[in-house]
Length: 332
Image 1: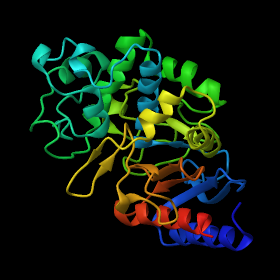
Image 2 (image 1 turned 60 degrees about the horizontal axis):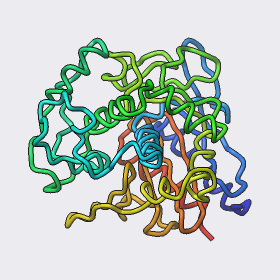
Image 3 (image 1 turned 180 degrees about the vertical axis):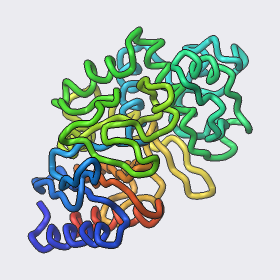
Image 4 (image 1 turned 90 degrees about the vertical axis):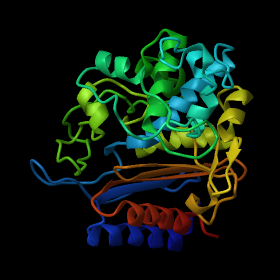
């Protein structure tokens, strides 16, 4: 458990970010006994409300880690081969039988697909039709490019293989077993605990990602809604490998690609040294979200932490600000 000094320093750093206008408010927590701490505002409209430890955030791209976990569970079930061409499970995709891009390539963002979004649509059915014509811009493994399209395809694979809606599968197989009672993919709408995110000035409880907002369906690219407590339940299980088969944890935590640029990726997680907190090992898994979240877990040390915020300012500055909070919490 962090010392009182470390906890005070981390709290002061988060409050500094609020005071500087970098974030509207935030909450942090670790898995080693640190009580959750909240600073700043949860929302300003229709009337101001303070951030609390019960506040629920649009988790943006951190939701991609739930998609990866759903796929890992299907691998454990023997229903999915991560090294098979992804078109084995989505045969209607335009790439067809000659595709060499694997499920694992999609999960590590080395598929060759760009982060362009020509599949944006006003309905789920139209988005699905368009993404089946989404084509790579380069050969697989020649570069890293973070692509939401990769994970929309992965979410569709979960649905195709399981025969279940993505949110239903996640709730039944992942969230409920972990005791995550306040996590969902469907936008909850305005409520007393919903956090206001400011980029499109949408009401609290709305999807901030424009693709998710437009089609109004759970997508594997993220934009789920969750709390600090639920986040730590998910992360602590990854840290201690308690609930699921070993193959689940091995798939998620093993580095699958290392590029000359320094990028390291596992199945659904970032392992790039420059992105990791200084206090954790090279085995740290980390993911961030556009609206202001960072979650991380170090299975080799059994440590996990999350900093969930509502970002107002520069993405890079806010990302490093969240890393500073984590390092202050976890420093010796």
